[in-house]
Structure formats: structure tokens, C-alpha cells
Image 1 (cartoon, protein in one colour):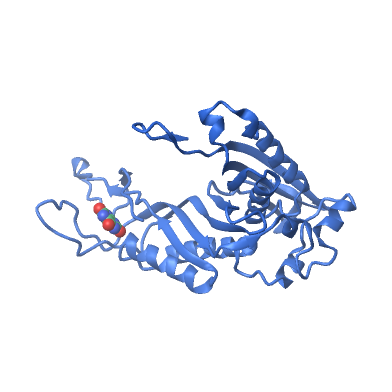
Image 2 (cartoon, rainbow, N blue to C red):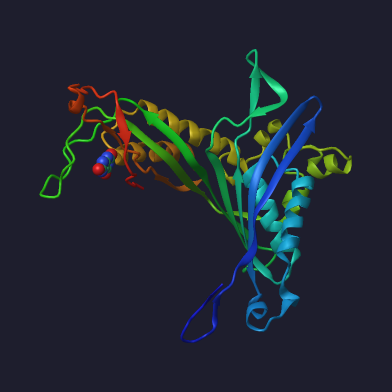
Length: 329
Ligand SMILES: O=c1[nH]c(=O)c2[nH]c(=O)[nH]c2[nH]1
């Protein structure tokens, strides 16, 4: 909420529930799938009087928002796919409550990868193989009418920690009275990568989540009516004309992570700026339904230790210490 101090009126109101933690197991015969999400679901609409007149009749309790999140975590056929789950939850909130006109859902997906036993994936055992998270933010806009919902989806990665011990230089930058940094043609490059990409907006409606997607025999509802946990099979998703859109967020996410790591590893980096741009260009070139890509790569500086105190020339530096972060976006 914000109020304008002088006029003393309500300028903006948005509320909901944050940090709803969901672990969902989907059983498919011997194979089990798990997702762990941190969910934030916020709403806007005709809710001003709850702030200005203590009128709780317009308040869907944040506790109910938490319960809806768990309800859809149990029943949504889209639960294993963060973009589609976030779209379902946001669409549900705006569709169910006449006076709620916008929903803002963020889903953070933690990494649980299958444990490989003797190089074979285990059916129900998983390992946290990195602290980076996939983050999906969805805005459902119902201000043009409940029959005309549109969704803006921004996805990405946070906290992807990387380091390369060679293949990075930083030379020929502005040199003046404020410059103390020396040119280096071979340095450590380490950073915690944050990536965001914005999909083309898509139309949504609640029936889209319940009815079969085109090319999906029987549709998700049929499966749930039969009392089974299920997901849309990957095969059926591929037949749907959704490639590269927010519906297909898993494919884009896998590729974006791969491109990020590949370019980081293989680029003969002239600077953080130049490497970052190459990553973004590659993602945009191969994903036509993305409107923009942005990266943040705060440089984690490792500085060679001057070891002349011990009579040691720390050349081709093998001992380095960590300096505070620069920030490049
Ligand atoms: O790749 C870099 N870009 C910079 O802008 C910068 N600034 C700095 O001090 N070191 C680096 N490295």
C-alpha cells in the first residue's frame, strides 16, 4: 500500500501471501516427480475500502490465498511446470473473485535433480545440485474484462554461481587520475548470475487449464476425474503449438541455463559486459517468443596476494583473495 502524504489518499494497493512453500510429488507408476516451490501470490482490484474504510468485505484473506495455492498444487495438471502453475494460480484468482482485477504470482523453483545410481536415474531419489533457482513471475490482467485475460510472463534464473580460472581479460579501459586498476590479460572471472527473459504476452482463461489443450487426448481433467495424479505428458505438450511461448517455459529455461553456462565457459572474455551481451544475444536468437533478455553479473573479484613479504613471487597468480562485488547489468 502507498499513500500520498499531502493529499492523504490511497495511491496504490496490492496484497496477498508470500513464502508459501510447496513440495509436490507426482506419482507415475514407479516414476515419481517432485517439485519444490516458494510461491508469492498478490492481488489488485476494488479493494481500496479495506484500507480507507476498514471494510473487510472486499478482502480475500491472505490465509485463503495460501489455501488456494495448496489446492491448486494438489489438483492442477500443470504443477510440475512453474510457468503453467503460476499462470493457473493467477488466472484462478482473477476469475474466481469478481472484484479482483489483477494477480501477480511469483514461483521460485528449487533444484531437485534425480540421483544417478550407476549412471541410471533413480525413480524417487533426488539431490539439490545447486543453489540457483528458476524464478517465474506472472501478471494476469483482467482490467479489460474477465473474458479477456492477458498474461505477462517473465522468467529466469537467480544465484547461478560460476567461476573460470582463465579465458578472461580486462584491458584498455578508461585510464585517468582515478584509475588504479591495472590491465590484465588473464584473470579469474567469477560471478553470481541473475537472468530474466520476458515472453510475449498470451491470452488466458480458466477453461484453458481445465479443458484439454489442443493435441492432448482426454485432457488433464479426464485424468484427474479418474482420480489419478497426472501431468500433461511431454509428448502431448510437444504436439501443441506452444513451442517457445510461456507455455513451453521448461524448454526455454533449460536452453537459457545451457547457453549461459556454455558462453561463460567458452567465451574468451574481453569484459563482463561483452560476455553478458553474447549470452543475451544467443538466447534471443533462438527463442522468437522472447521480447527481451537481461542479465546481472556482479563481478566477484579475486585479487592476487602480494607475497613479497615472504620473498615469494606470486606470478601467474595461484593465491588470490576475494574483494567486494562490482555490478554489471
Ligand atoms: O569486466 C569488467 N568490466 C568492468 O566494467 C570492470 N570494472 C572493473 O573494475 N573491473 C571490471 N571488469
